[in-house]
Image (cartoon, rainbow, N blue to C red):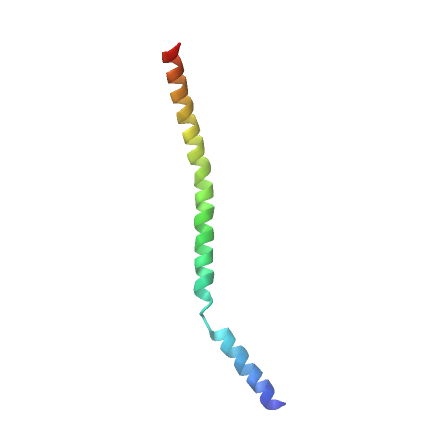
Length: 65
């Protein structure tokens, strides 16, 4: 029984000390941050494009009539 607990403790310590999954978590956080920034930036970009197209539409409309 004592050796089983010792093996379990050593296995748990080995599992805790490993860092292989850490890179995956860091990349996932980086991708989430980039996606959040892109989403926030798209709203500002869409607003700017919308106002630009309205200006072009107004100018073209004045030339036609």
